[in-house]
Image 1: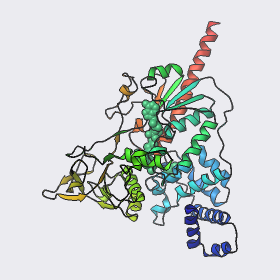
Image 2 (image 1 turned 45 degrees about the vertical axis):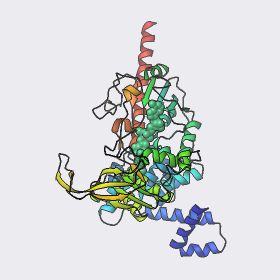
Image 3 (image 1 turned 135 degrees about the vertical axis):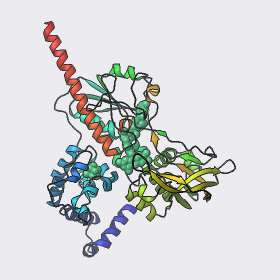
Image 4 (image 1 turned 90 degrees about the vertical axis):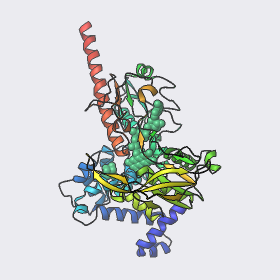
Length: 483
Ligand SMILES: Cc1cc2nc3c(=O)[nH]c(=O)nc-3n(C[C@H](O)[C@H](O)[C@H](O)COP(=O)(O)OP(=O)(O)OC[C@H]3O[C@@H](n4cnc5c(N)ncnc54)[C@H](O)[C@@H]3O)c2cc1C
Ligand code: SF4
């Protein structure tokens, strides 16, 4: 209801003529739909069809943006959806959460000419949401069934995209995940106010309806070793993501009420999904009424501060050791957080956390940006004697993620990793050093983006298909030779 009211408020504000019509008792949804369609068409028609589609080049899945914008401008939404979903398994998800300012929209020539970008992400979301509403989104149906099976470890966006692509080719696919729900960070990391959970759930249902099997609460390394799983399938894909939180090495870091970002976000997401979360209900992981300090400057930090605001925190501060221009998080997210009342403490690094058993204050130092390092990035330096204190009864550490120790975790000591702990794969092809075992997503790239995970999942599916075809062809050749 609140959602409908918000939409209605927007219609009222922007479309006085529509308000008149509404007052004549036309159905609200009909009016809203017409308004949204008109807005989408208006925006889409701003695309100059420039012939140098930098937006498409800078979209990791190379969406054919100019074509679906043209179709939207002409009101041919079903065709627009067909074009959009041909390159992207989850367009409505990307439309919601891609950092478009760094990808497609940031490279729109209209934006670069100073006239404001075509709002590509919103149009992508609109086209796909309409497709869902009108029943145009259907499970993939393979034209032929193949006997080979593929096991995929990790049901995040990389694993899900690969599963759908492989199923479309007729393979028998099983997705294994240690969580109780599929979706990876789409379900337990990214907050619901950015990505509604039912948007993720309807996609995972669609993939199940296409015939992909889900084995949930199945942890590879605990319930089966990598080798055991490899023996059960003709090929394997590892899409396990990166989950080792970077630690705060400070006095007081072990105090109560100091939490890793994922502990905090998972509790909030589970609560939103209707799960019993005792640590939220007893107030431990609920920011309501608290002075919250989030340490870090990436998108995860932005998700934490914005979640704390929504939970009713008394104050929310974000401590970051560089300045606004050097923040890794999306500019748009910072602007959203500021608008919502988050206080950014730029050029500040924590020195210690103080408190009697439970954190009560963050002691911090003022920083300045010094000389640029080899990467061209200025290193923060401490300003002597600049120590200051911030009141905090909840501290959230959002310092980024590293890969877990996969060779130990999966009981696969021979699995090759890079010096960053990510899986070593061949390019192109994404095969690890273990024959028939491929890898995709964050576990190859390090912490990245959903749209890159989708791209990797699609690429890995294509490589697995070639690998299995080659094996099948070799088997046929040796059978013929044996006759
Ligand atoms: C808080 C947060 C917010 C983010 N916000 C955005 C955003 O707004 N936009 C954006 O583009 N990106 C965002 N990202 C990044 C994005 O979520 C990731 O890049 C993306 O989810 C990576 O996909 P993946 O499939 O590689 O891994 P994941 O999504 O991490 O999925 C990996 C899956 O593997 C499972 N798994 C791991 N080990 C095992 C095992 N041994 N056995 C069985 N299963 C296992 C996990 O349970 C998980 O379900 C965010 C990340 C975080 C942490
Ligand atoms: S997938 Fe992401 S980068 Fe590509 S067009 Fe959509 S919003 Fe832009």
